Amino acid sequence: MEITKFGNLQSDIVLIQPVDDHDLEGIENEFAEIKRGCKKDFCLIAFKVDDWNNDLSPWKAPAVFGKEDFGGGASKTLEELLTLCDDKEKTYYIGGYSLAGLFALWAAYQTDVFCGVAAASPSLWFPDFDGYMKKNGIMTGNVYLSLGDREEKVRNPVMATVGDRVREAHKLLKERNVNCMLEWNNGNHFKDPDIRTAKAFAWVMNA
Image (cartoon, rainbow, N blue to C red; front, side, top):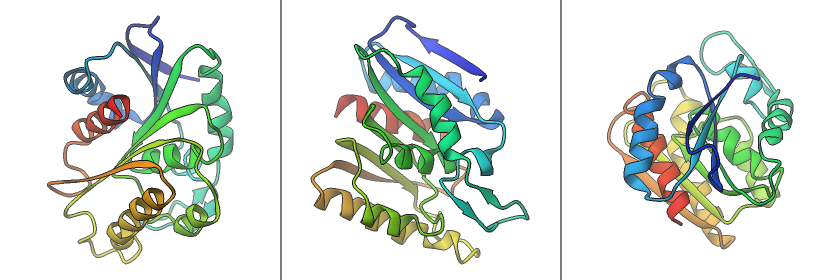
């Protein structure tokens, strides 16, 4: 397990974020933006994911872009990640960007460890995830969702559903009395992921 920690390692508030190399390039800026958005003391743990499409996907699914299928390895990843959350005196939040945002949301259906979910531009187009949310109950009280206003305007027919899926997810969670925020950002999926993720974490910490 390769992890990088930022902030006060003794803090009672711990943010958990699955990341790849691209995320790590902007992680220091993200950390600074979180501090600007929330005045609380916290520790951010960046959890390096080796195989993005496998390690963060809740179940197997065919490739949506490129040729790499989704391997369904999220359960194993969550098992590793929960070893970072063994201090019952601390408050834990989970979040991430893109498929890591979807993973964070899915994780809150598996465990009540997390006080909030920071799902920035989550891959809610993932096959059958909308049905999964309808059939199951989430075990956290605070969820932040966001999307770029151009993310649903893509040629890929599966990924183009993301706008409708995030609207449906927001409506469903609100109906189930979850404190849920949906924020729309300017731009496509690749614009300012560090800033979007920071806004997500700051919101759930302030909720």
